[in-house]
Structures are given as structure tokens and as C-alpha cells.
Image (cartoon, rainbow, N blue to C red; front, side, top):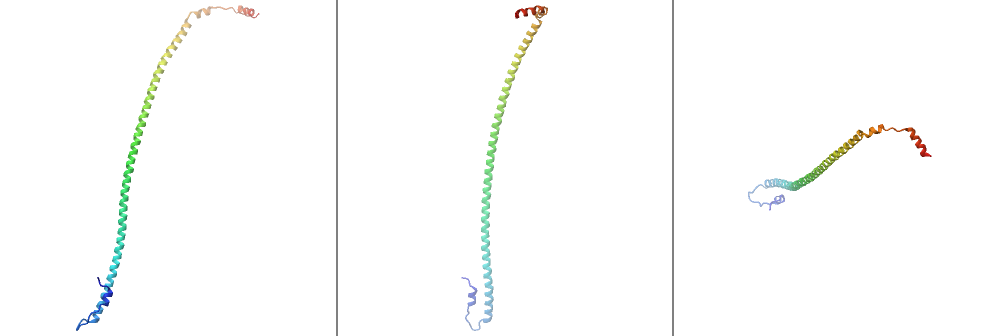
Length: 170
């Protein structure tokens, strides 16, 4: 067990013949006590400082560990978000492609329907043109007919018509 300043102070030496000078020894012991007390205080301060530094080191180690865990969690979360975003992007693209295919198919269907309607209108137009031409030709035949000339030659006496009207009234 190490000596304490009190042990040094209380130390008694046996006296011998022609021994050391007692005052010198006491003076040296007093100086030794002061130095020893100073060293013990410094040691205690250093131990306290070491304990404090170890405590801070532990605190910082805990913070470092927490930060490392946080970084790992953040990286995992980022990877998960990235993965989810890629999945969502693929779904959006797939949905857009389906919609595009549907729109193209609808457009093609409408285009076919319109083409069929155009063909039907062309046929109806030909039929109408033919019928209209026949009607006009028939009307021209009627105009060119000699009956018109006979009608122009037909003479009606208006005086006879007046008498006939009076007779019919009576």
C-alpha cells in the first residue's frame, strides 16, 4: 500500500550514535510531504480529468454509433424510396402504354368507321347523281316532247267559258 503524507509525517526514526541531523531530516520530510501531497492532488486531478474525458469519449462514441446507425437507416430508406419510385415509374409507364394502345386502337377503329362511312356516302352520291340525272333527262324529254307544241296551238274561247259558267250556276 502506498504511503500517505500523514504516514511520512508521523514516521519516527530511531536515534543512533552519530546519526543524521534531526532538523535536516525533519526539514527534508516536510518538503517530501508537501511534494507528495502535490503529486497526490495532481494525480487526483488527472484521474478526475481522465474520468471526465472517458465519459465524454463514451458520449461521443455513443453519438458516433447513433450517427452510423442513422446513416445506415437513411441509406436503407433512400434505397427503399428509390426502389418504390422505380416501381411506381414502371407502373406509370405500363399504364401510359396501355392507355396509348387503347387510344391508338380507338383511333384506328374510328378511322375505319369513317372510311366505311365515306365509301357509303360515295355510293349514295353516285346513286343520287344517277337518279338526279335521270330526273333531269326525263324533264328535258318532257320539255322536248311535241305535246308542248300542241298545247301552244290549242285555242280556248274565253266568251264560251263565261256562258258555261253562268249556266252551271243556274
